[in-house]
Image 1 (cartoon, rainbow, N blue to C red):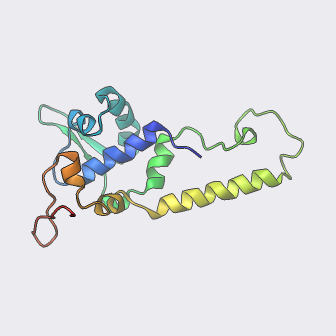
Image 2 (cartoon, one colour):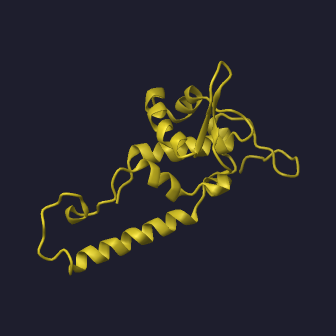
Image 3 (spheres, helix red, strand yellow):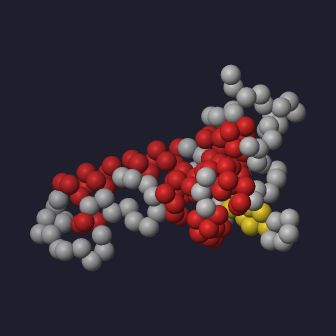
Length: 158
């Protein structure tokens, strides 16, 4: 299974917002950090906003922020919103040519089991997990250093 570019950058956008916690993030800044077009990110923003994963704040000083805590947004949540199809074979697609084995096919059940395992692993990881795994993420994205819960500034990893 291969995830789309849309899903890849949706996760990256959420990671940026999580790393920039407490501040509004602006799409032009996110686009610059990742080297992609603003238009592309605006297209991704719509389904994320509709699903409540991102909130938009309009106005001159507006921007985007996470729609809920980063430890409450799983990779499965993102994939479910951004991917159009999870058909791993033609027989999974709507309107596919009827196969005489469709109800007793070993391939169909094996692929369904693999897809469910894939989803289960994605559900184990949150945006927060991805951001915390990279202490230097703020520096890499051009953001101010993150404050830790004890008030200390997180130092970049050596």
